[in-house]
Amino acid sequence: MSQSFNVLKQPKPFYMIFFIELWERFGYYGLQALLAVYFVRMLGMPETESFVTFGAFSALVYGLVAIGGFLGDKVLGTKRTMLLGAIVLTIGYVLMTMAGENRSLVYLALGSIAVGNGLFKANPSSLLAKCYGEGDQRLDGAFTMYYMSVNIGSMVSMVAVPYIADAYGWSMGFLTSVIGLAVALVNYVLTRHWVADMGSEPDFRPVPFSTFALVVAGVVAACFVCAWILDHLTVAHLLLAVVGAVVLLIFLKEILASAGAERRKMVVALILMIQAIAFFVLYMQMPTSLNFFAINNVEPTLLGITVNPLTFQSLNPFWIMVASPVLAYLYNRSGSNGKDLSMPTKFALGMLCSAGSFMVLPLAIQFANEQGMVSSNWIVLSYLFQSIGELMISGLGLSMVAQLVPERLHGFIMGAWFLTTSAASVLAGFLAGFTAPPAGDQASSALQTLPIYGHFFETIGLIAVGIALVMLITAPWLNRMIEAKDEIEIGGELAKA
Image 1 (cartoon, rainbow, N blue to C red):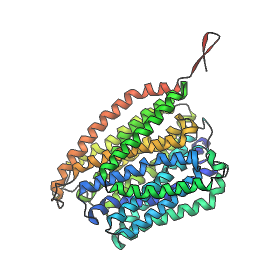
Image 2 (image 1 turned 90 degrees about the vertical axis):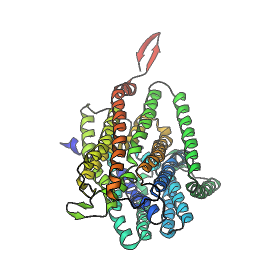
Image 3 (image 1 turned 180 degrees about the horizontal axis):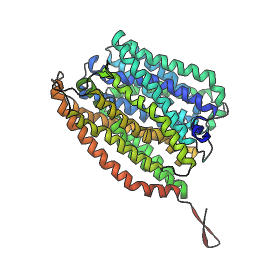
């Protein structure tokens, strides 16, 4: 029985990192709940442009994480970089509350948020990995519970923020993000002594003022550069391609510089990260095509209560909260019994669940009423499948990095992991554009949009099923690469290392 509760028996710093991540994500997902719709209703963008701009913003948000990981590993230290990122994020959210219809200020706010997130995002997970020794069976459970903190924060904000924005205006909706970051900063200040002995090597030495000043100047410049990029989307896509290529080359260089089991594990990590791109293309449909499907074609009721259609996005973190402790317990129990599924198998099953989340929607459309509206029960089911898939891929992605990548590269490769979301965001925004009404026909009826969504969801669902099957077939091979031991030559004979 005691093993059943091992997942809750985590080191003290775990809980500090848990709550910082919770409040930071409260702020970010409060923004995400509104952003694509804000583009359309406040800035007057067509849906297609809204989706592409949202994709570019998301690409910057996740594409800059590798830089934050590098600064945390090599320059400022994990904790200093995390704190700087939280401060920049807060400034970005304050600018969003002031932006109104001013596109230039909106882009500067979003640029600041992207840079702040880039500084912040990789470092809490990197710090968390340092709380556990090699082979600690609590690690999968810890990262699953850590991932739950993301979804507690996002669920609360995705439920509350649309109603706040509806009642008091967009600015008050964005103000909730400021509050979330303020709470995260206070939480860190009050509990930072819990991680006094943890961090990357730069955390334990003073940072020269000239170095710190150079970093701050670079951060300010990056905010303005990102704002300009968002106003020039072609440049955004080109920059992402360049950053992705550089990160990939560095990753390949590190693989070639390693040997034996370390090299094989890093190869598997790279393959799993490439597989994850397909998942994140599906995942990023939630704030874009799936969100607008809920607005246009889903009955706005849950359990007989009328709801704001934007709050359907909160179903994702709700199901994560329900499923996280269950999966964490199962991982812990199966790991203790030596029967845990391999990481490649978990990824493949997660992709299959994500495919199922889209395959149920064409079926739902067959039961639409005469007005072209679908019961909300179907979208509840869709989000359930998507959330389980998310837990098995995105929720374990950081744990995968911690297990397969050498500790010296944790910050950088965790940043590279988030770059998979960045690459997928651009593709996801482009694909979501296929659900937008024709130019000049923004007021399409539910009956007109219904078949468009049905065809789109069926197509990407079938493609996802095919990818999942390939992942299932290759999972045993990847697992053998992870478990294979080095062979070294001793006295002319091979012996297992």
